Image (cartoon, rainbow, N blue to C red; front, top):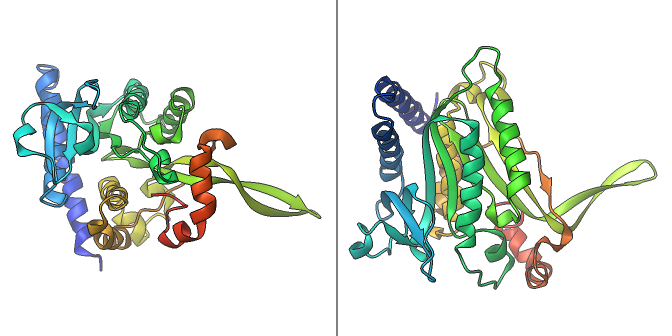
Length: 313
């Protein structure tokens, strides 16, 4: 027996697949319209699954308090308090943006690099007001790349390995601070990568031939990969897995980090859908966080640990 929520996610996956096939039939005739249709597919998912007071818009730019605008973004999720008068202005105030997503019908390698560049640029729009380590480490705007499918369909191709290499290489080359990391890369018919952060770095030492671990200053980030191949074939968890389900589960977790109303729902979604991931951490140097953020960590570490903040969002 499976939770009905799992059945909903399988149904949603089939709908996205059918939409992809329909859009592709005429994509060469009018690529612009094909792209618009793909964006609307994802916008509809957010409208149907996020709390009803979150507002979802398409095709706009983010505007900071200094009047600097981002590149155009495909789908934007706005805070419940966002003024209705500004909803159709296509320039959205960064203070009112919860999340922003680039949408691609068919993922290519160049899209990954460009999305990581855009994630960095958008995070730089936001002026930091550091009062605790979380505000320094986590951007207030979730940013991701969401796709119907991918371009590596040759039988000899290994799309997961190819995508993971491009993702890690681009992150290493472009991302200069953990706050700038891409939060999501979701491909509805393959896998989802979710960015995880740890406020400290765990180092492995040895004492009399036995390893032991110690937390030191620094940060760790990882693009945790979730796909059905990480589970035993024919197992329930393998059969129940959908990239969209895990993506929404992790999105709710990140939203709950900022909106306490979603905490219980996020926990339920995680328990019903699951959000396991294979993690390969990138270690950042000790000076990554400011002295103010590190002091906050030392003073409040016990309380943060109780709240579950020290491992990831």
